[in-house]
Image 1 (cartoon, rainbow, N blue to C red):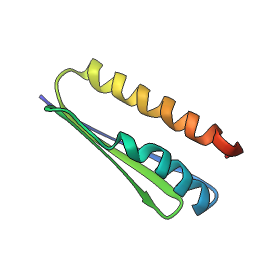
Image 2: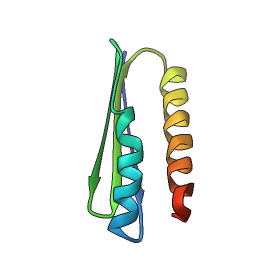
Image 3: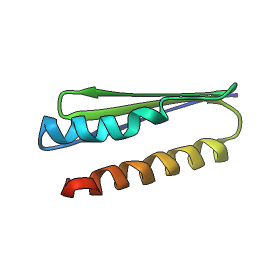
Amino acid sequence: MELRARVCCLYSEERVAEAVFRALSPDNVGGRRAELRTERRGKAVVTTVRMEGRVETLLATLDDLLACTEVAEGLGGL
């Protein structure tokens, strides 16, 4: 089954969005059955996840993404 999710984080300033985007960009990889793509749209950072598999795997991937986002936001007092 193909699963999809989109996570959008909105920031007060474009410089903050750019910093978070740059921190998450190395994660724009996938395996045979998964694709992650993160892009910055103005003050927003949007990540799209597409994968084959189980819902539990998608939820674990989203949990990892949000944990990485939280770390990126904490860098430099963002």
